[in-house]
Length: 160
Length: 406
Image 1 (cartoon, rainbow over the protein chains, first blue to last red):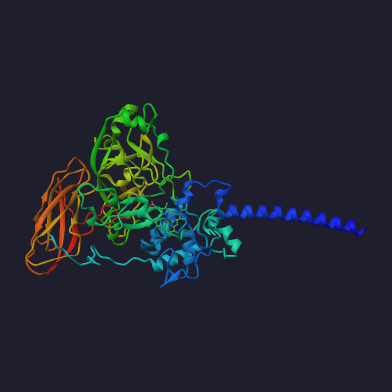
Image 2: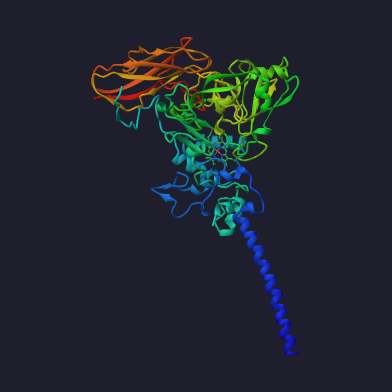
């Protein structure tokens, strides 16, 4: 093969390859952009825009735990936290869970009710971990028939 | 870069595999369900509510007032509790909004545009008390499940609209009609389009009352989005869940409506009294109708300190579901003695009534002022939390405030 001919082939191959990789880059870029901003190719429904769900890819980030509390959700940091965050916050916020107190039986009852009527999935092996977590850290306290008034913020009432 | 949107689209399982996150936890999690670990917006801006309002839950939005915020005779939007079972509809096209009337017991099913409703029928305005069936739930022992409302899930706004009765007469109601059920545009929390977040209703006798409205105005303005814009069924004096928001369909039923949240234990209490914590069979639960007699001291705010010898002016509101409040009293000695308050008649049926009194204290010290309303049938509020029920409804125990005399 002549040197000149060889040079030509190399050059052509180079051009073709450059074009090919260029194209790949554009496609990949587009795909990445689409992943980051889905509205680029598909328009989002309004429903999706309001409740932006997650800041970090890690469900439990390194700096998320402060004073024994998982700050983004308010859940107690203990064994089972990951399973609870993953399975109990997709539909409603953690606040609906942390507001409540129940016995083990009570928590199982709430889970069954959601499974029967609210589309909650089978929790599989995670159920035992989740129920343990909830029954331990969100257990009822005896409040009696009427509690005392507490956390009163005293202030001077001036005009009648 | 905005990873939120990425993860939102990709689904947790996919996202997890991309970054090598341990996906053991999510193995049973369906695609497209994403854990929520971020505040979903500022409710005070979103809904124009007062910063002192308490957010119990931000998805779905559930927000309540404090007693002293409810001092106005007519509750302004900024102090109105917000109760949602699902997601607030995001896009509302008022010009194409329709109300469908259907069901087994409708003579001729039909559809009304919003404009037709507003022009074809006479409009009425009433002040109507709306109280969440679970208001006061936080006090039940053993605890009852759901949002832990304290005292502030009640309001009395002015509602303007057309009478449901006039629409029912227009379409014709068959003799076998028992109930009306509402349907709204809100979205189930699981975003399953085949599931309704809530679809409750009322028996025919309530549907046919003068004050039962299809409202398009609250306090003389378009109903705020969080309260059901552009159309809301209003059934005052009943659990507020009977007053369906974002109303787009009413079904006239030949049986008790069987929509979402009609089945026990939702908005139901044991038909016969049970011991605290007792298991109750579904068939032994009865649907709540009228709310019970209740009152709230809205002035002063709890924690007031006053000089010895000065009088304390107190005021508030009282209501009794379908009934009128006949008597209002207060006690500063934990119920040992009661004194009468001045009490106004309601502006219209189902509006709350205003009371006031001038309270004197015998000596220095810590006091509690307790308020007690009695309805026209002689039934009054209990000082203790009333009959326990699995979902913690109908807590109408006396409200009280703490006062110190210096």
